[in-house]
Image (cartoon, rainbow, N blue to C red; front, side):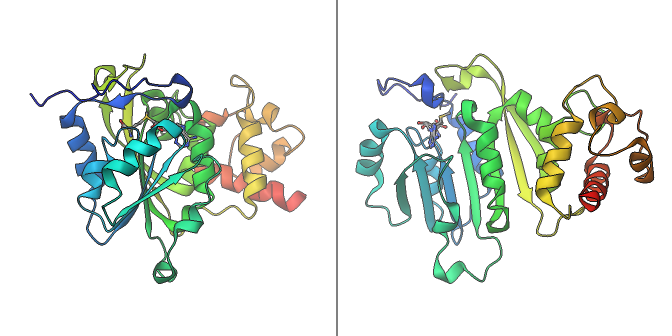
Length: 273
Ligand code: SAM
């Protein structure tokens, strides 16, 4: 067995979702899933005590790191400032401008950034939505999240876990569930299982909404009351006849239709505005 990590004496902060990876076998498995290459430009959100940062820095030409916790900035700088690939940003990942990381030489490459992170669970949904704004600049994202959230992101239509997050993520990205990570692999251990997800933004979306704001609004309203039918939840946006005109039964529930159906509904709604 490889040694456990995380015995530095650092006081973990709950408000920053600090559950640090302590198992080198899991860390190796995450890095193997990312498959970093020397010529690549990676971005890590929340390095903590560098469980993932250190092995990534051994490989890539550039690693931008975004960390909010003041107490982690000095140790990270002391340890890695000699490394040319290391670029630390003391910032909130929720408001960070990811476009600012693109170098002049990368401007004509469509999707240079590879984003990774064992994310603070308390901000995972708003962070994912913020990152989706930069999807055209991102090749892929590998994240550790609560297993329940990864289940929802990767759920198929018709399954119990299919919901608003599934539609919004799958509209923009291919989403793959990679593997589950149990609580004992973190210090301190979280209460729930975690999982690694790979999100690859589509260079060209398979189904394109004519107005993404209208799409987001319609999806939100379709899932607003779980037990209700589309006819009920979409009242005020689309009539039963309009839902039927999209080839969808108004008595279906939102969890039974996939991204394609939602895009059809949203595009019709947009036409009526
Ligand atoms: N990557 C380390 C590991 O795997 O052991 C630490 C992961 S820990 C779950 C989450 C990290 O994100 C912590 O370092 C925490 O301070 C940082 N963090 C929390 N909220 C943040 C935010 N809004 N912006 C940037 N970093 C944040």
